[in-house]
Amino acid sequence: MQDLDFSPEQHKTWAELYRRQVPRVRQHASVHYLSGFDRLELPADRIPTLDELNARITPASGWQVVRTDVRYTDSDEWYRYFDRHEFLITNYMRSWEELDWTPEPDMFHDIFGHLPFWMNRYYAELQEMFAPAYLASASDEEKENIKRLAWYSTEFGMIREDGVMKVFGTGLMSGGEEFMRAAEGKMEYQDFTIENVIGHDKVLYEQHQNLYVIDSIEQLRRELARYFDPILQRAATK
Ligand SMILES: [Fe+2]
Image 1: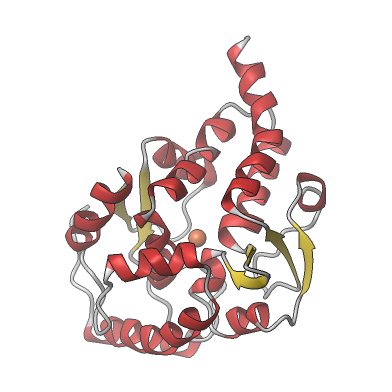
Image 2 (image 1 turned 60 degrees about the vertical axis):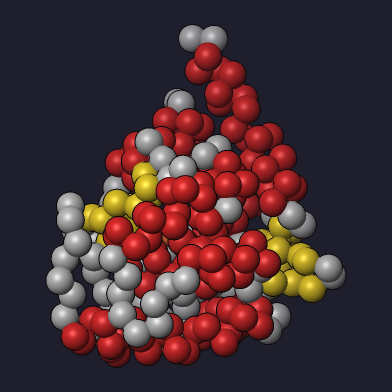
């Protein structure tokens, strides 16, 4: 799908969200996000075009950003795009009344929350672990667990950097109140391990109370591999 013409209202919502969120991420976001943020150079005053985004992201990570008019893409389809190294962004933008928190991922979340990370090849490699495991899953339970592991790491995780807890998850990065509660230590925090995360109820339509903390991207990769490798090995020997 080619780029759409967004309304002045939608550009204004983007600009206001950008203005509010940049100082917060500068203070509390992971270095993995901020280093990409500086190189992605998102416009402050308008929604960026797909061409602008791909001109920076594809050379950096090999991934491509693709726009969809589906508001909430089904997981099976999402991971088929992921498997082709395509990252879907929605053309839906939250309303002015939902500036501080929206339960539904919108284009500000997809672009501002996710895309700075995709300026790092090593982050793309981390994300590239998910689709093969998801697509090789043998049951809905395994698929659910993989989605849960993504949710509590790349989407809503925290990270320890030089002894300080920083925000890592893309869903927090694009949120106002929830970002600040996470950053200021106002949630319950547990180490990110397979055992801690699986079995915990995923929160979808309200703000989180429990978050999981990784030590590093390398630690997260090792932890995910503990769950993913047996699935991949089983599929390979079939
Ligand atoms: Fe997301």
